[in-house]
Image 1 (cartoon, rainbow, N blue to C red):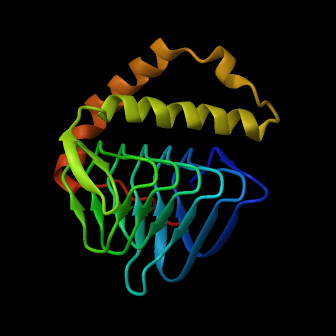
Image 2: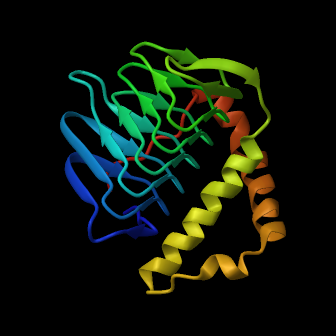
Length: 194
């Protein structure tokens, strides 16, 4: 059985939603799957007011260590591990966001957009503006949300005041050493039904 770090009482989940260990769903996040399925990976966070939905025949797969920012819309697409989807960004059907990428806030990716790994995407329509090396930083961000989720689950809301960034960086390095080669081979981590 997989165990999320935190699911806020206001989060709404419908249909075939597969949650990975230590993922978190924040206030007013909505995840709907009337057809296909939604998979949210290990240590991934879906933040406040984000909407995750499927396309008609397209599942939504959010890889391990991803951060889906506040008010983002993720719709029938694949987000590979360790990506950060910015506040208010929209990603449409059949898009693929390569691992370690950042989609800037308020960007819009039209259907069938394919973003190479390690890309910074900006604009409407979104386009790659440069190559980046944010895999480790994106994992650290995901670990911060994992720890925050665990704290919220116990009623503690100020855990970041005591965040040990060096320790989180060491943990991110260990994750990269253990997981990154597999991401290259299989592309994404995918949660299974618990």
